[in-house]
Image 1 (cartoon, rainbow, N blue to C red):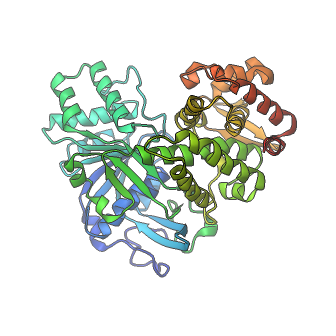
Image 2 (cartoon, rainbow, N blue to C red):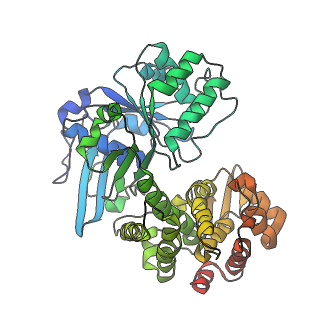
Image 3 (cartoon, helix red, strand yellow):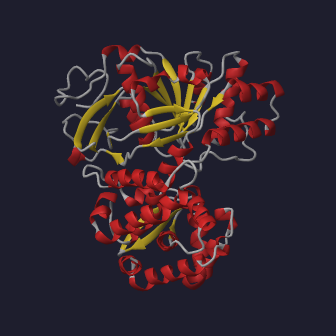
Length: 493
């Protein structure tokens, strides 16, 4: 039996399952959400669902699917319902919770249902827009026309929605991007305003966008590795959307206007939602220590033939790399007047415990999605801060960087690029995959490190200027090429 609104009364749910209250399906739509991804469903929609159960927010989510891959059929077949299993260790206690999330009212395809999305733009009940379009989603696309149906980019789609809202004479939105970009709210606002000028929109509209809407930077922190594996299901009904997450959850939203707190009333339902005038500390800890470590370790994990983070934490070499990288190289580099090394290392210890979660199967290959942009956004700022403080080369950082270069060596198969490690192929999902594949073919193993590090189109900086870094990365690449990733890891450690 498939999970749907109609079968809720027929399914025998496991004891303790949080089943939707009957009134939830009559709640108004209050949120536009760009993205159907597991992080949004495992964190943002989790908070909204929890608030609805407590009678706090009392609103549902309209999800906009922006990509061409896949469709909205699964959500339609299940009436937006999905099972969310929360498992892990929290404060020394095992958490095992099953929730049937009912926060999503419907999913609309931007490609085929744009007119319906524009109706949502002028729905006065909808006051919140959230997004997670990956780091490459918040970018200025020159020539993006908002008269297109739909506009090409996420900022272009958002601008079209804002224009319709303004034309209808309605109040602005609270807009909260969750992409892992520093100051993501301000950057999204800047891009939208630039696009408005490029599209020659009325100055009064541009002023309204700037002043009547709250673009709030935010930071999300929860490990949501993917769909719930069949082996981890404690229920016997069919659910193609079931997901798994750890217990830890944080959504830090930067805002000082009381209006934001009023609109985002779901924050009252869970202490994991933090609305504060400055979220810098939360962002630096999570973005650099959790995501930064994940990113620098992911290529090593794939090349070493270690499938998941949990398995990596059981491997002495890789776990030693992860802990030493985090505690000895990354934590000191992000410290400053408002964040001590001890505080950073204390947070780092909680991250290591979360990496060891016995219930989470987080694949290293999944973490390499948009690998090059993740390194640029998450890790390069730490590298540059390290060199501001010290002159020595961060050796483990260099190994992680070398592994990323080695990981990107690939061959094209149609429009996709595949690398090879331990006799197995792996799919590279990175907008720069073709470009980096061509660099490998042009420069070969001996010169590839120099070619990649000095490429300012990749990093917005020439990394060969960092004392000793190119030499160290080149040496690490040689170790990987000659003896394999595991041998290189053992040698460096």
